[in-house]
Length: 245
Image (cartoon, rainbow, N blue to C red):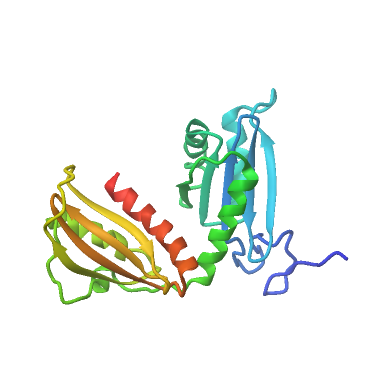
């Protein structure tokens, strides 16, 4: 039996992820774009379901530029704030980012790993998006999240910036720099932050490395178990990757 979709205000919606033109409510929680050699697939996730469609990459009546303009318009209509782009290879992913970044501004566009199929990508993205909705967030300035009795952070300003990059995540409650050890083998290449694992409570362990000095870092997250902590860990690796390059 057909189920009528309505907004909280009572207005009818065309999909579970649709933007309500009557009251301005956003129902989309995220969007995935997957670029293959033949088609570009789009899936806009709502609170329960999703709205999906695809277009041919090559059409004698539509150029690549026009193709992405059409996609951008349809994505923008949902007012989705987070768009993740993947594809069959890096070149196709870069094509998607380059062509969508202007039409979707100021939406946040991020890049995912390469996936062999669009279904594999969308399945993983949906799990992450729905998990992020379950996680609590904290609205605390990053500087105020740094705690602990060890006031020294190795690596100078560079080390401090890496610690702050963790604290910027809304899923991090505290970052606690710990014990400094000086008997590690020097790896060179400047200051590095290595995220290692999540524990059974959902908190993340990290190592701040500066030459032969290694400092333990404990990251207290809003995750409640190891499974959710592992997903937070992946998100934090993205924060660190952005600053370390």
